[in-house]
Image 1 (cartoon, rainbow, N blue to C red):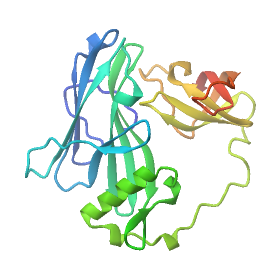
Image 2 (tube, rainbow, N blue to C red):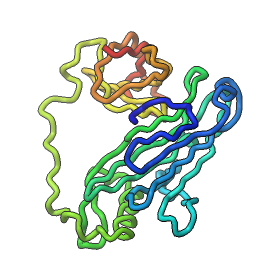
Image 3 (cartoon, rainbow, N blue to C red):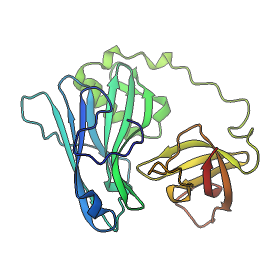
Length: 261
């Protein structure tokens, strides 16, 4: 289930042996205050782990609420709703899936847009793990997030797979593109580089840089959830130069009136 809205009491399944439920007053929270309860149940045998990330990018494992000895993992989070909105720091649980040397990170989030709410599940990161000196995990693509590498090291030690990873000496970086990304785009158009549905924002490649996009600046496609997918080409009605004093983002522009073409 990729970037889909669900507001049912029936569990949603996005990978085998993982069930997600959300409970609460969906209608009442659409324009008021309240909370929605997320429950993620992982059946025995799955190498899937819940965690949270704070403002310093430090990783905190989610508490497993499953009955001792069941072999299951059960994670729970109460998502606050204020004025019909959720906020990224408190609206999601992250799940890390280990599959051999590969890993995938998903966000299970409660999202409200224009009074409508639901569960959104999106894969936000993926990568390959290597081992260094058979003692720690190495992951060159995430070298700027050492807390994640430390967490991956702990998990691979826990499940006994650290020694099975390829040596970091075997790592070959991807070749750099011959032309700058987005250089093939005409004026007034962009290509989605990334978009985080739980956060409600993303980055667009332009022929002269990058533009920030917020969900409220996306033209409604009529499916109930304003979102973009990496690789989509979009038409941009307006590009607003970034205010130099705005330290929140490093984009050259802010895009408005964004519509998938």
